[in-house]
Length: 115
Image (cartoon, rainbow, N blue to C red; front, side):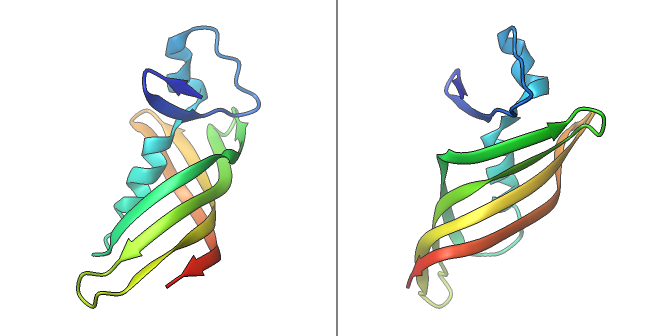
């Protein structure tokens, strides 16, 4: 779902009534991408989430969500000139705390790659 030019993952259990509900019932895609980009490697990376593949389930009692889907990626290493691109699956588990959502588990698998 897109609201004010921001993309959100919408859990099946979400029931937003007003625009402000997105802060508590949905996950901003940029949070996931920022966590992926902040992993500390020196690669040049870009990602495009294939929004039609996204699946989300949330547990209100545990204040957590699981998000999975597919993305296209492009990587390059300026140190050695190597490049790669392709498609990958991803799966993230998030917890919602007073200071915002935090990824506590992540998995991924390259589905196809070109070098």
